[in-house]
Amino acid sequence: MTNRLLKVLLEGEALQGLSPLQEADRRQAVADLEVDNHFALLPTAIVGRADKPPPDGPFMLHLSVSEGRLVMDVRSTEDARLITFGLALGPFRRLIKDYQMLVDSYGTAMEEGREARIQAIDMGRRGLHNEGAELLLKRLQGKVSIDHETARRLFTLVCVLHQRI
Image (cartoon, rainbow, N blue to C red; front, side):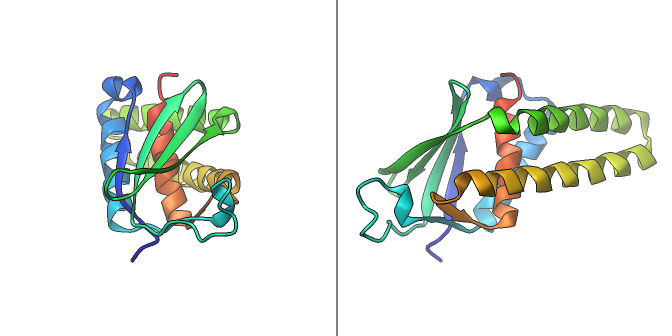
């Protein structure tokens, strides 16, 4: 399958201070993305190439945060840069903050063994993932075609990258 991500790499100093739960979320999201995803560049994403078909994948995706923007560096499997674009993180800030609060609450609930609380937090996390995925789909419109599950997993990685900024 060509319209997919083969590898996802996260870059940046925010990755140094991850809690065990954040690290587990990061590992799981990357593993899930590398197994199952839909990711295709759209012709309108590449300036000056709207009349030509965009490059086919599979792709490697380097994600980082720089100057308040999510940087998505899309590369070929040979690591040749195809396109880099940034998304302002402002629209994601509330969701990221809420997600981080839920991760912290989840850790506390796990330590206390409060099963009902853990289930309630998991439901809240699913809701935030859905909301974050919808926002990501909207923000990537015209650049990249992704499915909802890919957007959910990418939103997790956005939260991990943004965790200390």
